[in-house]
Image (cartoon, rainbow, N blue to C red; front, side, top):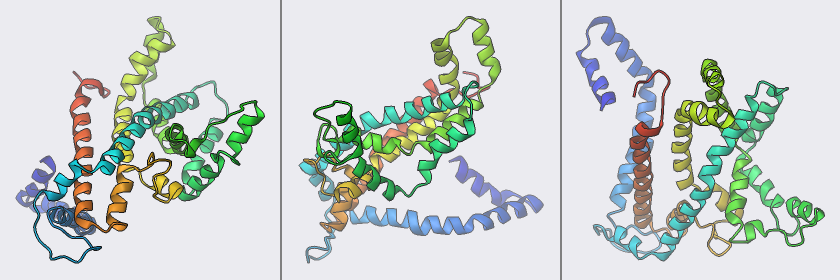
Amino acid sequence: MNSFTELFSIFRLRGNARREALTGLAFISIWIVGFVIFTVTPMIATLGFSFSNINLAQEQPLKFVGLQNYQAMVSDSQLQNALGVTLKYALLALPIGLALPLGVAMLLNNKYLRAKGFFRVMFYMPYVIPFVAGIFAWGSLLNPEQGWINQGLEALGVQNPPGWLNDPTWVYPSLVILGLWGIGSAVIINLAGLQGIPTELYDAAKVDGAGWWATLWNVTLPMMSPVIFYSLVLGIVGVFQYFLVPLVLTQGTGRPGGATMFFNLYLYKTFFTFQNMSYGAAQAWVLFLVILAFTVFLFWSSKYWVHYAGENR
């Protein structure tokens, strides 16, 4: 509401203030037009599609079907399985995806570490490699028969190494390992947050006799909570939109045994394989509402655990 209020308040300005405000709007007008055409308009269109019967695989007259597409999702076992797959992966990927970049950033922020610049570049470098190329490389590494990882485990004496991407039990750890290969961006963000913590807080904790764990719990984590909150919001949005990795690795088949048929992948197949546009649009809006609900909950809960420097609570 504040953004809309500020936008309309421009017309109440006079003289140079109004001229400067209109100049600013002129500079961002291209983005506004693009946002309306390529984001807002398709969203409104898909909302309309979700209440219709558009199916390119079947010839039928267009008609309004109300909530029929949404009701169909209640009895769609494949859709429910896809949602369950997404949630199971999220429960494993989100905690590791938050903790590991923070831990690596803390190591890189250690004042006793030498060649910090080199290690920062090495951790960030995989992030700039084309994502699809990285997926193919990791798919080969995790090959249970010829992959280097299992060959290394066998060389160490492991007689029955994991089946990784071919085993429903190991497929989620495999996907998490694949995703952590590109944590360089998250490491840089956490490192910037750590370097923004005032050193006098650590000095005060040391004077009070706080050990490593007490300092981490009472200084580092509270001061890093805005960064953790930011990473958590992006992580939840990303995990519900998880799509490209399983599509490239399994060509959208969901193997092994449907364990990689994520919600977004099932949504993609509904649109472009089954060509059921109306049902796909309904799924897209349900996905949007689920992500919105989690995001709103996070913003509501942030007042209890996110702390900003200089803020009085």
